[in-house]
Image (cartoon, rainbow, N blue to C red; front, side, top):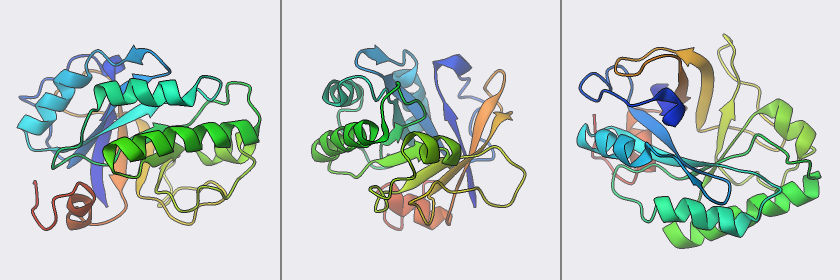
Length: 208
């Protein structure tokens, strides 16, 4: 598998002179809810692009808030996809005290809005325990790519009900990488580097 990380402003400023050794991609928090934007997204994106590291953006989702407004917030940060950009991600890990039907409907609205604007199908980030409980293990999203979160030493993660495979796996929240102070979320891409480049719209051209 191909190693990567994900970052947000909680990690603080990144030293891109040191950053990038040992992994091939990074996902960055772009936005949260209807109005919050990650203050370090632009700097982190520019640093990754300059170092030719594949990069993607994610939105932290609140099902109780207007999904269209949340999509607009994300799209005000991520206005287009460039070569080397990975598909956008919807981070689904809180229920907002909504029932499974309401959460599923809100997810679909956000995905539809972002997909229409960026001409790219978003990836869903979630964990099996949350998804199986809050969404009742719905199979409505079987056709979407999955980024699964499970912190374990096992060789493969437990998948949420309704999914048969995954594209990314966040396997640790306590990694360490050069250029970042403190713990870092660690990820793996479930495929080859060539596959990852294809996902980033680079065809056969390898970034690293």
